[in-house]
Length: 287
Ligand SMILES: N[C@@H](CCC(=O)N[C@@H](CSC=O)C(=O)NCC(=O)O)C(=O)O
Image (tube, rainbow, N blue to C red; front, side):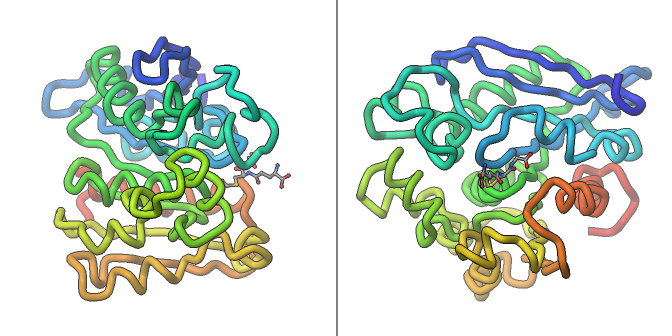
């Protein structure tokens, strides 16, 4: 049990990564009441950052009370395949294990298993829908932290209309232009930068032609990865949105004194939950 619902710690064999993949799923209290086709439970996908597994979000982001309040489930995937034996996979916390960067790798040997983009869209979400029939996989929103915040922006913008809403905590907004992006896009996709742009939110927002759904993200003024290394570049997405379908729909909030940690994530989980609840049709608030 966790709050009013249940946190499931699961693993499944993925035909896409060709590995066992771990995932946590929070089923809110409403899941255990009577649901009809009309009242099936929508899903919030939570993508975690570098070094994380499914437990970081489910233990420290505290979405569960809000999931119970509004009536959505939360899916917490892992951040990479594990233990595939690629040379160097455990050499650095910024690449390889727990750093799948939500892309489909094209460079060998990573291309054999590191297919996190397809894994999440084509395996995990459909499998969750099949296994938990009271969940409504036609109503999914996405959020995430840091690498996972970039993942949330990227999945939302690359798949117009698939996700009802998007939010992010300290996202890497313009990965093609920052050290984490260079390491991971270079390592998984190779040197051709046109391939990097296919996953870069700043590039994707210019092509987005889906519904006008506000993208909400927070970054702390004491986030060391931004202050010291400029890994996040939060202003770039607002700038890139100008003149696009989402002009006026990118809501970046700089929050005084917060850092990059899960104390920061959990402090704004309520605001992000309310944002998604609105787009998932769980509140009467106007869009
Ligand atoms: N070990 C690293 C710090 C790694 C770190 O801070 N990871 C963040 C995500 S960073 C971008 O994706 C994180 O979420 N960590 C897990 C947690 O529970 O806080 C170092 O030595 O600096």
